[in-house]
Length: 188
Image (cartoon, rainbow, N blue to C red; front, side, top):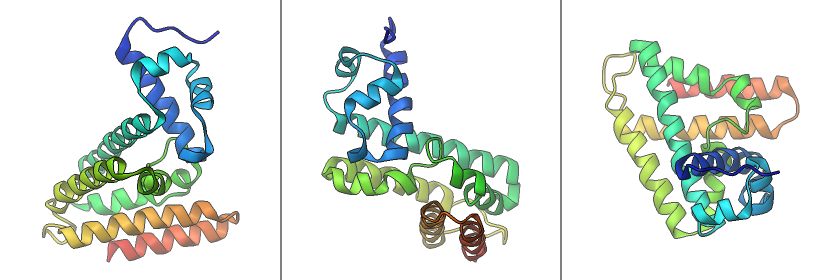
């Protein structure tokens, strides 16, 4: 029997979290609303009381994914200190992150869905990723100088592409080689 929630915020968060996991695993076109509801153990009434459509849900999942990424970046800055870039790259370009598609970063999994889903998703994605670049480009790198926008964009591209490629291969040795090469390259 699907769950019923008295609290609208809890129901919405439950849907976003469950949908985020499924969308990362299967992609926007690879999973329907019914499967998302089964994952969240909710009824269609609960879904449609929160979201007008699956497209609207994707926007919420993208926003939630960027909020989670922000926490990862903050942890890297906090725990890594002046070596935060190294800390971030070790966490992100790791075998653990490669294996954890459902709970991993949205960039390697949902970038393509944002691109295909239409203008609103692309605008939101662009706005949120630009905010990440603006914020973290100002932080000092190991050299003591600000990281800079160009390096931050390049790092995000290398990180995202590295995880995507590592997930696309079956062989762990090859995947680890990809991750290591990307870590070294992103350290610049």
